[in-house]
Each structure stands twice: as C-alpha cells, then as structure tokens.
Image (cartoon, rainbow, N blue to C red):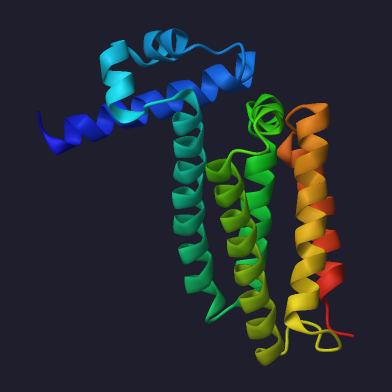
Length: 196
C-alpha cells in the first residue's frame, strides 16, 4: 500500500473521530462509530490508533500542524507589516471560533483532562500562540505601529486572554457568525496594541 493511501486512511480516521466526538462526546463515541464514519475496518483503526485516546491526541496534533502552517504565513507577513499580520491572526481566531464542532469538541477535552498527550498538545498550542504574538508585537514596536509602553510578552498575554475569551464564548454559546463579531474583535485588538 502506498504511503499516500496509508496517510489518507489515517487522516480520514482523524477527521471522522473529530466529527463523531464533537457530535456525541468522548464517552459516547465508539471506535466502531468512527470506523463507519471513516469508511475503514476496525483493524485499520487499531493499526493507527491503539486506543480512542490516541486518536484524540492525533486530532490535537493535526490541529497543531495546521496552526504551525497558519502561523508561518502570518510570520512571513509580519516581517514587513506586523499590523497586517496581527489582523491575519485575528482572522485565524475568528475562523476557529466559527467552527460548528467547537462546542462539542471543547466538552470532549473536558472529559479527558488528565491524559498526558492531551495536556501536552494543549500546552504546546498555548506556547505557540504566545510566541507568535510576542514576536508580532515586538516587530510592531520596531515598525512603530504598536504600543511600546508594555513589553511584547505582556501585550501578547492580553491578546491571548481576549482570544481565549472569544473561543470560550463560542464553545459555550455555539459557533459564532464571523461577520457579526469580526469588526468588534479587530477593533478591540487594535485598541489594545495601538501606540500610546
């Protein structure tokens, strides 16, 4: 079997698991249900993922890979336009908040809070966000488009709090309509970083 075909099956399992868990919760999602949704046999599932928790970690790691790709594009913009890069980050946060599966998947993460793979993936994501935002603010300060009265890491902390609040709101209330919140979210971020 080709590497591409194997990767396609693994990706199909991850995507199916994400949808199934977001819809039915972690405990109520069976591996049989995931296999049916992915169109694979149980043997194929267990070849890639020995346990349901392993596929949950794979979902988070897949999300981290996507985040790294998005952040690489944002960093490329930031070298010339930190303010524009920050707007791209805002759009990324809004896209995450508008995911229809976010509310259900957030509850899944609450069902396995002590799993080391889940904790590690969430910690890594938080570190990636803080690192990116600190870099963007530092570049914005150098480009004289962002406030200099606070250290970049401090501004990054407040931006992270703001984004986490939006994502938490979307998880509690259901996915959001991007167009409804985009103007306010971008404006609030802009006020937070505007030079004093």
